[in-house]
Image 1 (cartoon, helix red, strand yellow):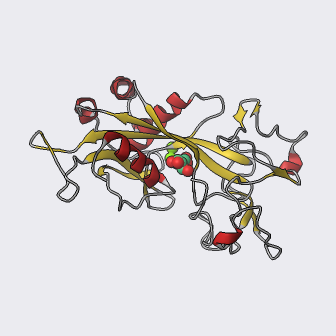
Image 2 (tube, helix red, strand yellow):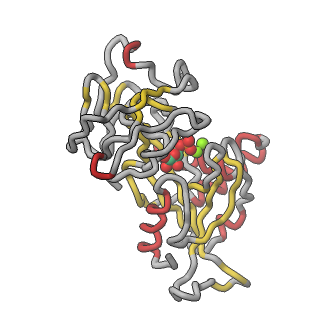
Image 3 (cartoon, helix red, strand yellow):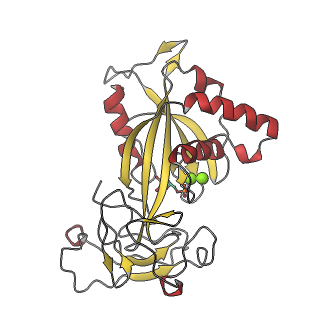
Length: 280
Ligand code: RP5
Ligand code: MG
Ligand code: MG
């Protein structure tokens, strides 16, 4: 998507309603549209300042970060293309959000995440289940409930500096949907083996900007969403779903166009519905 909605005209997350975005009407989102009245709220949360996983404030860098490139271990490349730098600050490629600063995001510019989409066919008594209206088989995916917004979402997370995407996809799935961080060493070995089978073959279904409620004019989420479909459902059948880390719930959810999910996660599932010709 190149048009954001969830990071506009609302209160900024995790601020007890104290940080309110400056109003940006649809026709003023683009940086090309003149908006002389635009007076965005400056907000960088104290919870990111000084964190090892976060950038410094831009005034504190000895030399400015290397934008649009791999900067040491930090990937500052945007999959949307070259982003602009204005007065030293990277500009959100999707346009205005009503907030300047980093908000609660760690990085200036792109903040890279990965979203695993683990799917299986819905079955009842070992038979496929078809939707009454569309006549198509129903696909299910693993969803987690986010602690920050209580919304259901893909079990995705941030790519650690230097980490390969395939590792992030597995790690976040195991942490959020299988509660790996609380498991015994023995169980961890077992879970990792099960996961290798499921995550052996993935299909990238989305790479780009995320309409994430945390985005600002100078910091935004991007992701690579990858499909791991278990045609027979045998490998995923063994998994014991258990919410972990910052997830407060986990379950199999039927794909359907009326799903209300975090950010623009629903659009990734729509892409999968087209590919696998399942009910939507
Ligand atoms: C979304 O935020 C991504 O699509 C991903 O699901 C998630 C990553 O952030 P955390 O879950 O680590 O907060 O933009
Ligand atoms: Mg996580
Ligand atoms: Mg997460």
